[in-house]
Image (tube, rainbow, N blue to C red; front, side, top):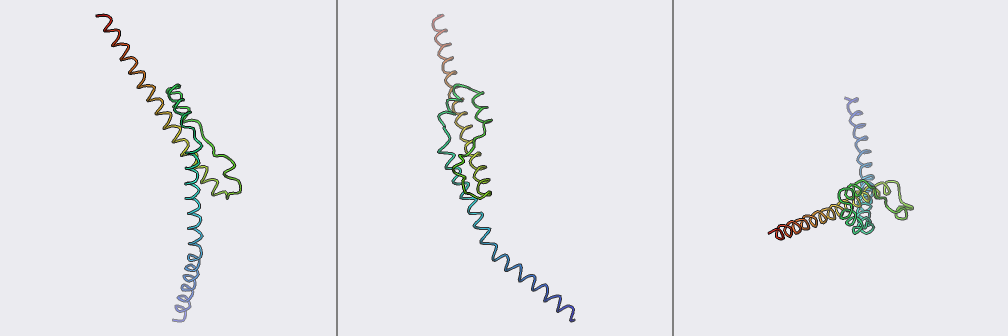
Length: 137
């Protein structure tokens, strides 16, 4: 019976140490998670401000499928000035979120430009065919 009491006491001590460790580490993990969320939100805002949507719309409009492929293939990078003095975790999170958002904007705008050009060409050819058929009659 004495061995069991010592064993139970030892298990209780281990459990108490683990509970204290969890209570201490939980706020630290929440702060780290909040910084990651904050870094991602800031990166998305910066990517929205930094990405030139008009340029990518024109690339899709004038370049067609090639402009669309370029928008998808070109990897945008965040400005280094936004990352000076930040922790490696912040830099990694910020960079990943920035690239994802900027690439999304690039591809979306190029697709809109490509679709606009395609619609223009369809209307153009409908008008040409309509004019040609009316002049033949």
